[in-house]
Length: 402
Image 1: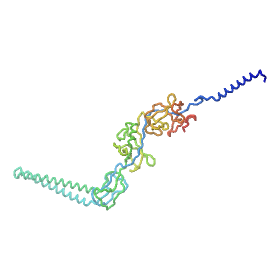
Image 2: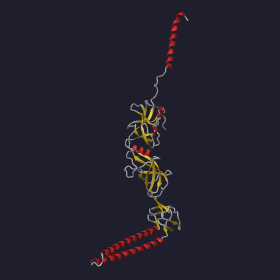
Image 3: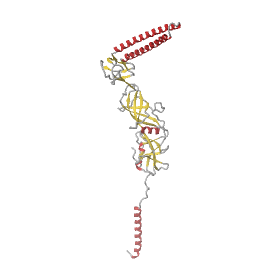
Image 4: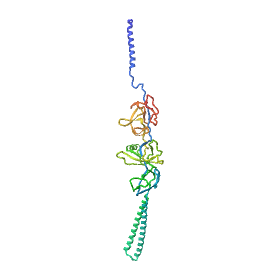
């Protein structure tokens, strides 16, 4: 190369190297954080306030409406059994017939004693009448007249005693026929003809149970009752209360009993050992489907307060201390976390009393891709009865909806 061209070549080489350095620096320059990234999308539902019926379910045992254990009230030998086991009987029906000969004889003797005492009264009254006439003419002394009057009163007292003895013998004779004190279903007998029974013995002859209507005895805890009262201050388990709920039975096989029931009474004392109390409910039982001793579950709904909210269970989380929280999208589309107060559950929802307001947008979809303070794009979605979001977000959103 000629000498006069060497400076020019050097300048061109420097320019070329500078250009290459600029391109290399430009290609390795770090990108600005956030440039080229999309705003995450979340699925929300708008909170609404509505009257809520607070559900509850309690275990229970079926018990007869009335139970009569049949025992004899007098001694005797059983001569006849006047019923068929397992049948329906009415109040006053004869069940057992005891040998009543001695009771009939005692009654006959009592009748005779009454007649004798009545004759004595008549005689004493006639004597008194004669002496009163004689006393007017002073033919007898005052002592004789007083004696006649006393004899009348004694005779009348003896007549009263005789009548009382007659009543006792009539009762004993009547008790020789053992009758049912209530209507219901009679069970198995424990004696046969010829057995000797005694008055008020410990062993029962048979048992009669009235089963239409029928009772279901429920057990509830004091803690559960307090939660119900917090959600509905006027809730009551008293049968005469206007807010007493209608009751439904789930049977042991999972089916629902066709009849509804009502509360009958509730204990006013909580057990010191179990912190539970008993609630008695009453159900119609025309087909005798419910039998004493059966285990059932009774559910009902108590009318709740008007200032309660429903939040999907999938939107509620709990921190290490057990405090319920939820994520919301505020007016600036920024994610914020709030503490909320939950009560019982209703289907796939929590019943919430504090920490929520009407119009709040609670996040139920896209929770895995966001954090508190992030700016998001909120999309209204729907949630079905199974707690599943029907409208899924794009792949760059949450992606946890099914």
